[in-house]
Figure 1 (spheres, rainbow, N blue to C red):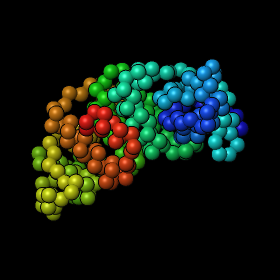
Figure 2 (figure 1 turned 45 degrees about the vertical axis):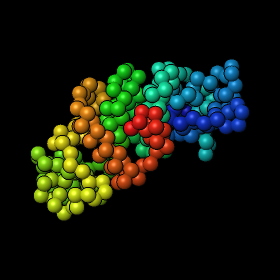
Figure 3 (figure 1 turned 135 degrees about the vertical axis):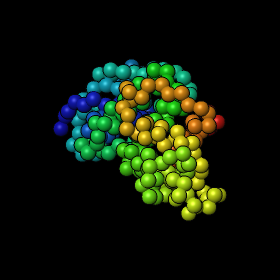
Amino acid sequence: MTYNTEAIVIRSQAYGETHAIITLLTPSGTVGAMARGAKKPQSRLAACVQLCVEGVYTLSQRSGLATVLQAEVTHVRRSLHADLTLAAYAAYFCELATRVAEPRPHGSEALYRGVRGVLDRLEGGADPRLTARMFESKALAWLGAAPDWSRCVACSAPLREEVWYSARDGGLLCAACRSRHAPDAPGFMHVSPTVPRLLSMMTVTPWERLGRLQLSELTAHQLQLVLRTQMEDFAGLHLKSRRVLDQLIGK
């Protein structure tokens, strides 16, 4: 079967000396594909196997890996390769996308638009740390690992001024329910009442409507801790690119 599809490269690795195996995120899910000869200096496929590149791909597939027959690149995103920090964030977003996405044809067009949105936002000069928090909150929702951030995960009461995060419960707790936890329990922390509102907004609001948020250092730090703990301890996401990014920016 031969078909055309819009796609974003979310994983790329060399195969032998001249070939590349890529993972394409399409509006209907991920596709693994072999790009033969793409690593040759003059290959017409060289540009289409770079991470974050977007284009229209012509694929041939029977079973297993597809073969890239040709590709028309529509968005190269050069700045995400030229800057070391942006490249590290882009690699993190792409690895997270590979863990969230379903194989074609069971994927989600919303996820495809979301990944395109986060890469466009990163390329457009938005704060990469805040962009990461936005993408993490959406990724947790796509995975089904995000609670209703506006309510207590234990009793479903609306959250007010006193809010705690509990890794054990996988969400936020109200003042009445926090008494069941030891203050020094792992993954248990007091957070600003701004955090639930931000998490709720970032989870459901489309990229184009999020704008540029201004957060205090404390709120930004708490958002990072909550989302990191939720991803690792509750959703089981331990990403190599996250560790590389931590080393680069010093967390």
